[in-house]
Length: 247
Image (cartoon, one colour):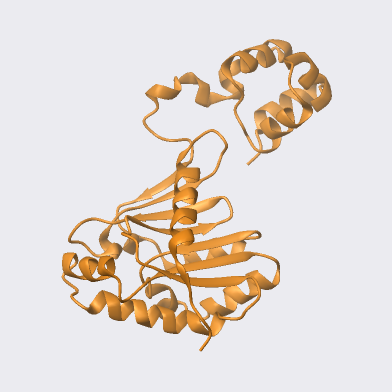
């Protein structure tokens, strides 16, 4: 989302990216990110830019009104849902459908996706055909952590069965260029549904099913750490996971 206020002030004053970069002592790409990606510069730089433009610094970057340590909400937090059941499956479909570079899914099963949107595999094939890298990490039905989760959620062997069902749903995608499917046995603290620079994080609550646990929607902004924390977590799990072989 561009910074429309900054863009308008620069346009009215005849400022180019290069000229403003020179005045602020930064490179042109930094100014381009401020304008086109709504990035926020450091406080000292923001003050110098505002002075040069003759504009109020907080009008250009409202997030600077509060010191970083005092923020109650991350700039990367788009929305918070009390439970996953509040999110229609069309939201997940639209999220994946917008992906251009990467789709990552980290779950034990999440069979609700295929059960409520049977054309999910077609969507993933289509994204992969357009050059999007798709990684699906499912729970290993034979792992101790999956067994324990079943006991905690009072599903017994039901979780392992759902892991097998999820693998059955995704198995037709094996061998598709750009799509990888692995199984993991890690403790699943959160389920992750990532599309490019957005991710839905489904937290897990002891004794409760995932559909009744909260979800936070994050978008990478360059000014926070939450998105990258979860992206790195996915990569760490992926490195431990075992590829599913074609049968």
